Amino acid sequence: MSNQDRTPGPWYSQPDDPDPEMATADYIRAEGSDEMVAKVFYREDTAFILRAVNAHDTLLAACKNIVESAFADARSGCIQITSAALADVQAAIAAAEGGQEKER
Picture 1 (cartoon, rainbow, N blue to C red):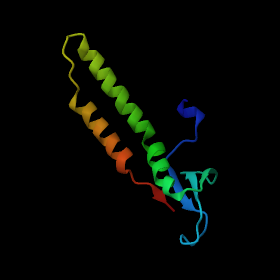
Picture 2 (tube, one colour; picture 1 turned 45 degrees about the vertical axis):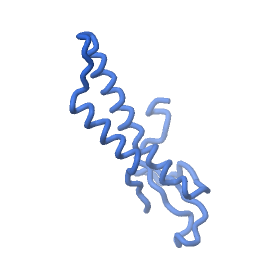
Picture 3 (spheres, rainbow, N blue to C red; picture 1 turned 180 degrees about the horizontal axis):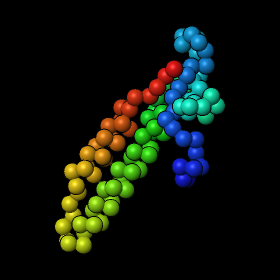
Picture 4 (cartoon, rainbow, N blue to C red; picture 1 turned 180 degrees about the vertical axis):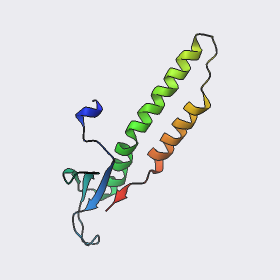
């Protein structure tokens, strides 16, 4: 799936009721759009879905950077990963593990 085949992010959540105590589901929306992307009935899953979607592009770019860096060095028989590539992966992992999901 390419980025053109999906709703662009970042995504955020919104309870289906103005009173969060009464909400039974979350609406997931894309920033800059009033359209609903999904309705999540298992509200415990909302944060996970948002972290996964919002971290996807960063994780993919960081993984590609590591692979390109490693293959470039592999020709010399020594694989080294640049500190910039490693920092990208660490930041992407941190975002995926505990990224900030937006609730409005």
